[in-house]
Length: 429
Image (cartoon, rainbow, N blue to C red; front, top):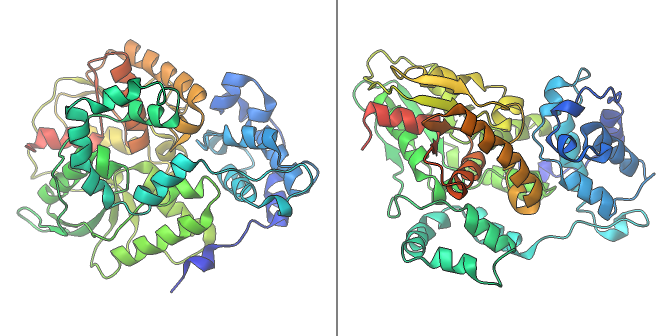
């Protein structure tokens, strides 16, 4: 049995340098890096950041404010990894650089500064992310908060405008299913094919209940009993990508315990960001995995027998967005298209510019709002040209980012998860 301490190995400077030195500075990554395309600064390119990480690891340059700025500007979209001819593990390098940035000033070379935690973000993480069940408690309160207009009024206060709280409020969609409570088990309908478990995530339990309800509905109709362990929590990706591996490891261990003892074929993830993190955490630390494989819902459903499921036709145009975690980490971006193809009459098209990040990137939209909004603006322009009826995306962060953009521009296009659209055509009420 592994404990979280088994994972808490600070990045070895020699290993870090060895991986960084595999970059030959060929520049093939530059056209694929969203931040480089916006700033045209070498320091905001993958090879530029790798050079800085190498310099900091070899103590040639300090991890000062400028170093922190350029590292934090990275979206961790990992588009550079896909095109790198030398297969440099850029995602691991950037994560480990952020671990080094958490070292107290006494452990840094002269001129270095440790990353400062934002009090507002730390409060949200401590109160809600670490204890995801609390999102179920706060959901009806948030629903009431929105219904009586307090969210809009709070955003208009001068002390809120321009703050992270104001930005967060602007991104919150309308809350649905305020009184929904999760059962431990949802039995299969009709023929029985087996049992699976559903990973709920954290933020989705507040703002995207429909995706998880739809997932259970579709799986039940395919003959699967679905388990939803009450003690599960956040996947830990938010911590991992901010260099806080102790917290990430703690959440991993809590989730392992929550899903243990179930006789299941798979643990289903509806958010590609969560699925990518849960899968890669064990690969990176060479640790014992969950008792069942983590599988993205799109991939799992594509591999099922649909012969006995009746699906109503949908003669509409649907544009598909590929989340970076789906495209560049899981390498599973084809599955949403194949899944949606089960719907008769549907017209499916890829969103132009899918190879570039939308700017959500976890909490990036809070930490780097100017870049995040610039990238979102490109997506909104692509949606205008598409003239579609629906936008589907398979990651909760991307979904929230798109939804806020559509709301701000008063577009009637609906953004949702592929499985939600499918569930509607199967007959979910």
